[in-house]
Amino acid sequence: MFPIDQYKKMGEIGLLGLPFGTEYEGAGGDYLSYILAVEEISKVDASVGISYSVQTSLNMSAISTYGSEDQKKKYLPDLCTGRKIGSFGLTEPGAGTDAAGVRTVAVKDGDNYILNGQKCFITNSPIADTFVIFAMTDRSKGTKGLSAFIVEKAFPGISIGKIEDKMGIRSAQVGEIIMEDCVVPAENLMGKEGKGFGIAMKTLDGGRIGVAAQALGIAEGAMDHTIAYMKERKQFGRAIHKFQYLQFRMADMKAKIEQARYLVYKAAMDKNNGKPYAESAALAKMVASDCAMEVTTNCVQMHGGYGFIKDYPVERMMRDSKITQIYEGTNEVMRMVISGNMFR
Amino acid sequence: MNIVVCVKQVPDTNEVKIDPVKGTLIRDGVPSIINPDDKNAIEEALRLKDKHGANVTVITMGPPQAEVALKEAIAMGADDAILISDRAFAGSDTLATSRTLAGAITKLDFDIVMAGRQAIDGDTAQVGPGIAESLNLPQVTYVENVEFDGKNLKIRKALEDGYEVLEVQTPCLLTAIDSLNEPRYMQMKNIFTAYDKEVIMWNASDIDVNPEHLGLKGSPTKVKKTWTKETKGSGEIVELPAKEAAAVAISKLKEKHYI
Ligand SMILES: Cc1cc2nc3c(=O)[nH]c(=O)nc-3n(C[C@H](O)[C@H](O)[C@H](O)COP(=O)(O)OP(=O)(O)OC[C@H]3O[C@@H](n4cnc5c(N)ncnc54)[C@H](O)[C@@H]3O)c2cc1C
Ligand SMILES: Cc1cc2nc3c(=O)[nH]c(=O)nc-3n(C[C@H](O)[C@H](O)[C@H](O)COP(=O)(O)OP(=O)(O)OC[C@H]3O[C@@H](n4cnc5c(N)ncnc54)[C@H](O)[C@@H]3O)c2cc1C
Image 1 (cartoon, each protein chain N blue to C red):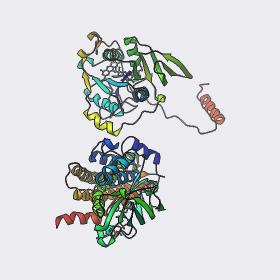
Image 2: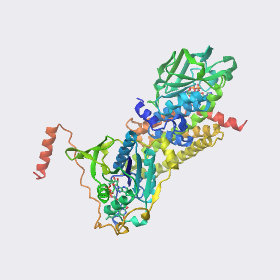
Image 3: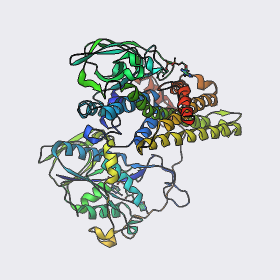
């Protein structure tokens, strides 16, 4: 069950709007502070961590960066304060890694666009009020025909399809969005027609730092639980943390976490400082998500059989880690981004 | 309305260890927090501010590091913060602490002074009442509800087996307990502005107090001995219906010849 009340409270105290200006009821903070908040929350609950990251660094960042002043004034305050929940719909059954394969179409009809199509695997969609949706305004142009829209739950013709049953981040709400003659006022086009692909890709660069922070948090949370467990659990007449082999493995894990931490914070700093951050975000996400997967797997190992049992949080954390290597661009894609920069 | 809230920074644990040789608290490695009851005091002040408008000043006597506690109070919504810090305060017992704080508070405009009932480290619950005595203010301790009609305060004070409702004129001093309210979390936006906001620093010469009353000199309490309580065996929890549980308890007491 998604802890909706706590999530709304995160809005009330200003976490959701952390990196946005106070004129939009944001907290006026910077991206690194926001990344630290995602990390801290993910230490405890990676499901809330991703809902937060998707709302703030995908949905709201897109509106804040590419929305018009009117759009920002209309949508950001409710999102900053948690009165509304945000979601970001790019992926479709036929368009995953290859986002150019989007089939959802938007046809101009007087003062409106009429959207038809289906999105899948969209985080927060079952609970969201405000969607950023990518649709083709001109399919003949390929990626140059993709456009971004702000779509409200209340608009006619939008509904939520299947809600996914997942391996990890089980309380995060991830589902399909179905648009059948969905009427979107033309003023809700974000940026210009045909600019959608650039908006999606640049926004995902920022989102990846959020996913990286989520992964870092999961690894740290698992490590904390494991240290406590190793002090408690006795075998051969002593606490298992006394075994040097286990100590050294923990030291290796700590090193992995610290490596990830510096890359994550570096990427956030690059974004703060107005430097290019596509590559540092890709590095951060790749290293931090691999770190989370490895560290949580080892943490389960340190717990022995108990680590495999659902009563112990590391069992969940290992399952939660896996998705960080997949969404907002798989780690294969991260390698494409990084190497692409090398051989340009 | 002006409200002054006394805030103490304390180690984050109910089980402060005592150095067996020096007989002092071991603070190393223990993170510091705002004393929990003081958070209730801050919250109540902020609620009065939200409802009736007020300027809320938080004040602490402590080492320079205590500034963090004040910043946290600002991030919760306090308007001003004062740190009173001086080597001359070292070794203060509860009397000296109360007099020092009173000497600072008297420099301020105030209608209500709030304190926590008790600090989780010192645990005496004397400082609040001590300040009230020094300032000659009416006081209500163990406050669990505050109503304010714009003029008079109607206070519910917790007693061991019930409560008392009292009307108090201002200025007055109230000490808060945890059932008074649920302290709010800091606002993110205030966390950022708290860094820009300056904490006012006062030393012994900035406050209105007889130097003889400060620090060790002004502390009549002498600590003779400090020791850690020896832990007895752990208790036993009997999960039975009340009647059967009582029977078990009685048989145990009889077994040990207590009854
Ligand atoms: C829980 C969850 C939440 C999600 N939330 C959102 C969301 O909020 N919004 C949203 O828009 N999307 C979301 N997604 C979608 C997610 O971003 C995609 O699943 C992801 O980008 C991968 O796309 P795909 O699943 O179609 O995999 P595919 O693209 O089919 O990839 C399959 C495999 O092929 C590899 N591959 C593909 N192309 C190449 C290539 N050129 N070279 C090398 N390897 C390649 C991939 O790395 C992967 O290993 C979510 C997904 C999940 C599971
Ligand atoms: C003989 C003696 C010697 C001492 N020597 C030292 C010493 O050398 N160094 C040292 O650090 N401590 C020393 N102490 C401890 C110190 O006096 C107490 O910590 C202090 O007086 C507060 O008392 P308390 O913790 O019992 O608070 P309580 O009386 O339980 O606190 C009640 C409320 O009073 C307010 N309050 C208490 N203290 C402060 C404060 N400093 N600033 C603002 N508000 C406050 C808070 O609102 C708090 O909730 C000594 C105590 C004694 C008895």
